[in-house]
Each structure stands twice: as structure tokens, then as C-alpha cells.
Amino acid sequence: MKKFVLILIFIILCPIFLFGCSGSSDEKLNFYDIVVEFDDETKTASVFQQVTYVNNSNNLFETLYFHLYPNAFREGSKNKVVSSALFEKAYPNGESFGKIDVQTVSINNEFIDFEIGGDDENILIVPLLNELFPDETVVIDIEFILSLPNINHRFGFGDNAINFGNFYPIACVYEEGVGFMMEAYSPTGDPFYSDVSNYNVCVSYPEKFLIAGTGTEKNTVINKNIKTTTFEANMVRDFCFVLSEKFTVVEGNVDQTSIKYFYYDDVDPQKSLQVAIDSISTFNNLFGKYPYSTFCVVQTNFVHGGMEYPNLVMISDEIKNHEEYEYVIVHETAHQWWYGVVGNNEFKDAWIDESLTEYSTALFYDKNTQYGVNYNELIKNATASYKLFIEVYEKVYKELDTSMSRSLEEFKTEPEYVNCIYTKGIIMYDTLKTQIGEEKMIKSLKKYFKDYSYKNVKKEEIISVFEEVCGRKVESFFVSWLEGKVIFI
View (cartoon, rainbow, N blue to C red):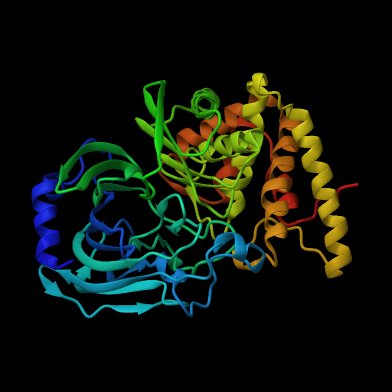
């Protein structure tokens, strides 16, 4: 799509872009104003993105860096998006490729000589016209074209839906004393790390589709068989949307949150919706109130069980067992607290959000006995599964690394990642609960959520919260589990 057409859509349909988002309590958040025009025939999208970037560091910047996650899907990428074991499931119609093609980058209407760099063409490098000092802002315009792969994944299209996860250039997190975090894609886990920002997004797409997206749907207009939907999302870590012409929607409400379930193959959609309602309600009581007014559970073609985004979770249509399907809904909903509101570097420390999310899922079943899933049985089964993993892995590889505090690239296989991060994680937190008691456990998680909402944390913050609430040292407990020193008999 030509630039002037995109800008025209931008001005006419999304005037709020010119003034930023309303309702934010933090004026130092980055703003992403995005206009997407999707072409279903070519499975491409033309996108105009304006980023108002705030330097929240203590340093001046001469260059900014943005993740280009879609380039992991391109032909010739070094870092594959799925493991070889999941290749056929991800590509049922044969291998397919996609990418992000950055057309122009400009600042103050002056085109910039940008670069595509990083370890795997995964970083957009933007040299600034002037040095950006602390607390100063710069507005950057980026035009790009997306080519979607035919893959059952976060980014791509399948037989039933089209997923736009991690589809746009998103600013790399800057850590004081370390620098910009520019990790490449990984087929294992969720290789993402981002700051909370504000979003206004306009998506144009064929009228036959329904859309599920992050944030609040402000309006939808139809012109010549093309829908244009505007979303506003304040204080969220990312933005995602899903399109499908097969969607049916059922809705509910809980604690001032509107919940929508988008599905096309569910024998009991009302029950799935109720799982989402019960999950939000339970985690509101356990950890602190969900701070957003919308939440979408979206059935889609996805190679893994599920995937979390702010205000939206993907649930794989490959899951045929309804009890397992419900479990994934609960788990992904818990991520709204751990990853969504309290963030972390998911590439370097996946256990921070995933282990706590898996334990939170067990807590859900402990508080909702009507689902017939016993908490003690969950822990017992997790322990047995983990012991079996250790036994088999030692026989196959002749050595074993059970540490949890590792980067995604350091896990040899996906089973190793799952057992160390999910299975061992739920056992770790249950063991901690046994030592400090359930009351202090829940009190600690409430404080953790309250103190670190909208921030990115490291292990030191988690440990400090438990030590403050419990009045005792727990660092050695966490270190023993995270470094793999715990022995299961």
C-alpha cells in the first residue's frame, strides 16, 4: 500500500493517534500508533507505525533498536521457529516462509538510513538525528510490509485463523549497566521481552472476518466490504490480534471485565467461557484485580497448547480433550498476571513467569473443586513425571542439567525445557508453600503483584518479596532449585 493512502487512513479513522492514549497514569510510557491493512488474497499486510519513544534510562542514546520477530519466519533464518519434532504439526501444508520488510524509517519527516542487524536479521537499527537525553522523546515513523507464512504459530495463517502475534517492530528493552536486550528468536519457549506501553491500532481487513485483539475495541466501520477496527490498549506489554471467518463469539462478565470467547470447534463453548470467567475471578482474589476491562480467549491454529498476550490468549484447536483444553485456558489466563502485568525477560529467565503461572494453575484447581482436578494429585503427578524425565534423560544423554535459571538457547530439547521450567517449577513453589504455609504464600504473591505491576523483574525481586513477608531468608531455597542442586529421591 502506498504511503499516502496509509496516512490518509491514519488521519481519518484514527484521530486519537495524534494525541496519544487517554487514561494512562504514566506519561513516560512509549506510544505505538499502528495502521494495518491486511490483504487476504496475498496474505500480506501493509503497515504504518508511529512510535513515540521515551528515554527512561540514565544515559543518552544515539541509536535505538527494535525487535523484528517476523524475520525468524523468513527463508534462510538461522534460528528456526519450531523444533524438528514439531515441524509437521506446524507446517501441515508443507514448509512456508514469511518476513517483515521494512520500507522506510523517518524522524521529523527526514528519512533515516536504517540497518537490519542482530544475530539473525532480527533487529531494526535506527540512528537518531540528535542525541536523546534522559526523559526526552523522539517520534519515529516506520513503514513495513508483512508476508505471513502458512504455519500454525503465533505469526502466520492456518486453515482456520490468521495470527498476528509479535508482528511489528517493538523497542528493545534497555537495562541499566547492561544495554539493549537484543536476543534472537528461539524455537523453545517464548523468546520475548518488552516494556509496558500504550497502543492505538487500526486494522483493515475483509468484511467476512471477525477480529479478536488486545485492548478495547473503540469502533468498527465497513466501507466497500472492508472492515476497519480501532483498538485502544493502555499500559500493556504487547499487542496481538487474530482474524477468522469461522469465529463464533460468546460473552460474559466478571468483576468489571468483559470476557469474550472466540471459537469455531468447541462442543461446549459456554463451559470454556466459564473457565475463563472462573480463572479471572479466582486470580483476582488470589493475586490482585485484573487491571483491564477486556479479556479474549481465542481458539486458533497453534502448534503449542496456548500462548499469552495482553488481554488475549491463543488456545490451540489441536487440543481435543476438553479437560486439557480447560487447563490451557487457566494457564494462559494466569499469564495475564505473570508476564502481562508483572513482566520479565522470557528469553533469559523463563522460569520467572512460566513456573509461577504453572503453580497458579494448580492453585486455581485447589480453589475450584467443581472441575474435579485435585491439587495434591497435580503435584504428585508432576513429581512422578519429573523423576521419570531425570531417569530417561540420564540414560539417553549420559549427563543431566536440571538448572532452571538458563537462557532458552541453553536447553538442548523442548522436553528438557518443559520439565525444568513447568514441571519442576510447580514442584518448587509447592515445596515453598509447604515450608512457609499457604497464608504467607498467597500474601507474598499479592505483594509481588502489587509492588511490581507494569515493571520487569529479576529473581532478586521475587526473593525479596518472600523474605519480607515471611520474615526469613529464602534465597538459598530458590538458588538450590534454580541451579539444579535439589535432588529427588
